[in-house]
Image (cartoon, rainbow, N blue to C red; front, side, top):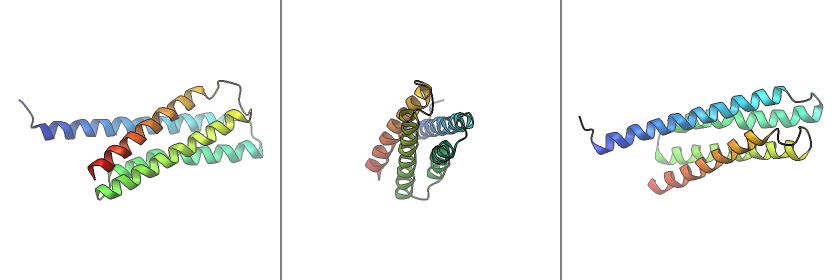
Length: 131
């Protein structure tokens, strides 16, 4: 049985939202696990806390965006997700450049945060174009 085109698009959008939400949650979990393994110094604790705050808020803000009350609210909340994702990238880069971890240890997280930023940029642009 064929579905109307709009219904099919709606289902695809829901699946896509679920996949992005899952990736953001997995990213946050990976960051939390990584931060647990960092050496416990005042400096590393500070950076780890900032990184965890930014990384864990991405998924929470994305869930809020998925329940937005209007298109403008949706765009605003997606922009918050993008902002927090970029902040997480900053803290990861700081850890990498400050020799807190061996070279390459952050490559998977840096790769994932880069992809998430690209996804969120595209999502914001698309959402704005439909507003």
